[in-house]
Amino acid sequence: MRLATILVFCSLFMGVSGDGWYSFFKEAIQGTRDMWRAYSDMKEANWKHSDKYFHARGNYDAAQRGPGGAWAAKVISNAREDIQRFTGHGAENSRDDQFANEWGRSGRDPNYFRPAGLPSKY
Image 1 (cartoon, rainbow, N blue to C red):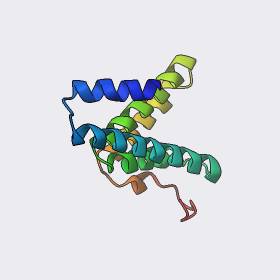
Image 2 (tube, rainbow, N blue to C red):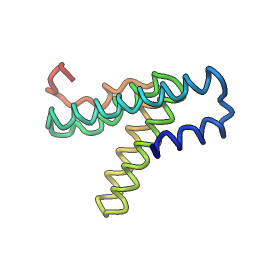
Image 3 (spheres, rainbow, N blue to C red):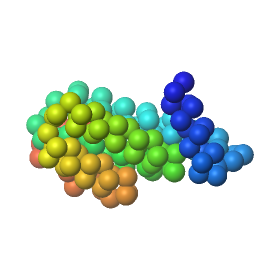
């Protein structure tokens, strides 16, 4: 419910109306699913040095949905990194993660961060 309220507010703020609002909301939901899929794949793969790849891939997939997906990816990525900083889990790692997040959101190839030997399933 909170996410829906935020999406409505942001869409109004951004001047999205009519079909555009529906499209933005749909893209945001799809982008959220893309981010969750990348997170789930990262946990399933349990592969050393693969977290940057999955960060970039989740953001890339979400941003490909459109403005709503890119917005969802940015909100989710920033929230995750803010939580890590708040709990004291390495500012340097957070900086690297944000670099990978922005890389993916900008449309660049997430495979840049792909570690050697990661199964092709991912």
